[in-house]
Image (cartoon, rainbow, N blue to C red):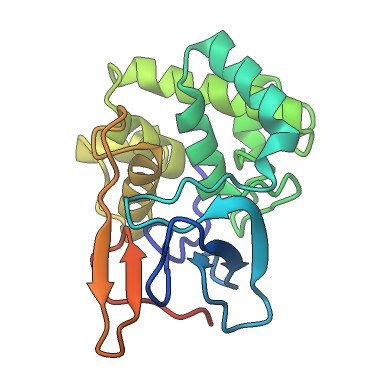
Length: 224
């Protein structure tokens, strides 16, 4: 489906310095789309998140501040077409980061990045209208899930790269962008099978005592 650039496979969570359950959390969205969270901001671009704190217990459950304005549309479409709401939210985060005016290099538009031909096929007259876009995108995803017998990997790959590519390769095509796209959404949704499994969290302690939590099994990242 849409083939815009993916900067990273998944959300990166960075907590610098030893943390406590009551530590304040700050958020920064880097130019490449990676989201950084920290309790010790060292960049003026960080913004404090209200009601969120660091924890050594596991994953930080931080709501996207832009999500609430589309919560009703997402909930309605998810319920109507029988697609898990968390999955719809994960697709929107990967596709547009909740930017209703997003346009990819290929011309995909809106929250769920519908290509003009696909939007027309789905009866979506205005891809920049959040309700129309979400309804069409979720309906399209539901159709792909049905087509591939609820094989979420293939359905997501088809959403990103098109059904023809998935059928040709009989699975996720060997396109780095599509492979990263599928893994990113499944991880965000909740596990490799996308069905409520816990998200892996890795903990690193630097030589200076800095503690880093991340869902990417590599060293800590720095915003650019």
